[in-house]
Amino acid sequence: MQTLYLLPMAGNTFGTVFKLTTFGESHGVAIGGIIDGCPAGIQLDFQAIQRDLDRRKPGQSKIVTQRKESDTVQFLSGIFEGVTTGTPIGFQIVNENQKSKDYSHIKDSYRPSHADKAYDDKYGTRDYRGGGRSSARETASRVVAGAVAKQMLAGLQIHAYTSSVGDLKLDKNYKELDFKEIENNAVRCADSAFAKACEDKIMQVRKAGDTIGGVISCVIQNVPASLGEPVFDKLHADLGKAMLSINAVKGFEYGSGFAGSEMLGSQHNDLYEKDGSTKTNHSGGIQGGISNGMDIYFKVAFKPVATIMQSQPTIDKQGNATEMQGKGRHDPCVVPRAVPIVEAMAALVLADHFLRNKTARVNTYS
Image (cartoon, rainbow, N blue to C red; front, side, top):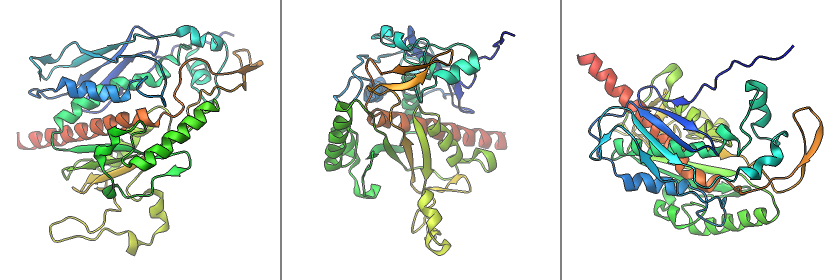
């Protein structure tokens, strides 16, 4: 009996009030998105939006994929004379440097630890060119929307940075770091000496035809109190979903995280100052799922990139054993390019909860 596949690909929209829907594939004509729910009257800095895209784009340094894309965003709607109109903001980024032939060898085979077989099992078809919809190229659209969200959240500061590569770990509190240093090195670390060690590690791994993972830390400052909803829509829960939706992410922890499980309550409790702030911030700026005005901080763990330049055993569509070796242009470590993606997803969550608060208050007093 022939299997009949009738499943659409759902899950393309993120957010409740401030919403982003993305479209496109890695080797299609273009990728892009629609931002719905963005308030009217926001004067947009298009250069700032493009700067964030440039931080994510391929080919920017020797430790990332050498695919050459300008990643120039073109806005199609929702903006007039540089100001948002309150209507849906449509945008696209044209794919300029596809090399689909680099993937012809996997047309009928499954790459280990990729979404290839999972897509075939679920939909009965897949775009094998760079992974199609499952490619991390989709995240460029998130960066555009996140950059718009940042400008809506004027005054709020989001700083993400590389805090580990493989077994190399930055052993410093974020208050000891210089966030201005992040864009001064290819690894995007807030410590120059550590950045150099990480870059050397990535190059060593790349020469061996292998890949390596790492961790991105993120700090959000000047966050107003009262963002987040109790029970299922807690602020940290939505941040967790946002981060875990990013390609290659394997873990998320906020505040004291797993280390908090080793502490006593008397050590972990954040005691209040007279002004309502707390002496410590093990809670990570969120209590009961609601922001308390303290800094929000969290970590996001990324696995090693699945495509490696070494031969590995796998299977084809018929279940026959075969061999596969990665070809084409791939990141030896995704972490440096993922820094602006983490910032973007954090901005989308905060923008959404900010507008949910605003809507609730309008409804209360109407």
